Length: 186
Image (cartoon, rainbow, N blue to C red; front, side, top):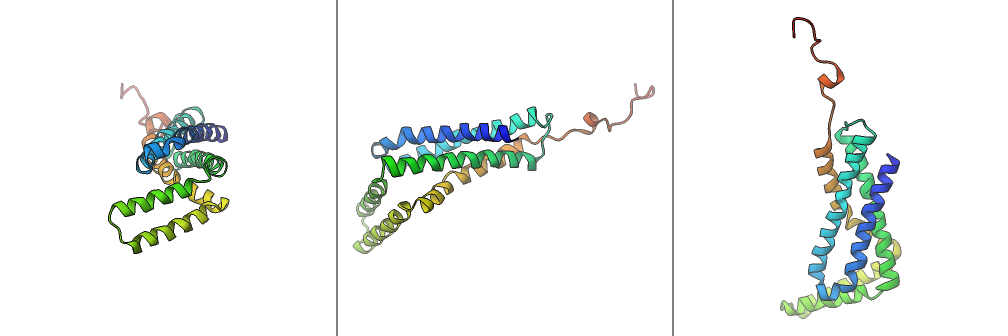
């Protein structure tokens, strides 16, 4: 199980990291709203490897059968490895290549509030909220925890769906528990 979990988790994580490295430099052109859609779509695509990892485990390790619980365990471990890769990629991007990300996001949120006709009091509240967010993002541990929470729910949902689809128990006939074949049943 360990080899399958690590292999499929690293591939899924590498895909999420690649999508992140490819799209974040263009985030201002894409827009933060569309960037959110692109980011979560790339997560779903990368987490499809959870399905294939569970299927690989079922076919190659478990003899063609797997319970929902075992399928869920394999899938969630793959998702956890992928999420850790995502966190590592974001930490590198944020602290090495885009330390101004929080400032740009704050400007976007405040401008969005202004254009929507928000009062100065609401705008000031948004500014305070963004200042607090920047302080949290500048702490690597809080940043990592917040980043982990982004892809994990997606991985959990894909794992639940995949485990439900791929569960396969042996039938009574395959176990030899059916009616014995005798001359009278032929």
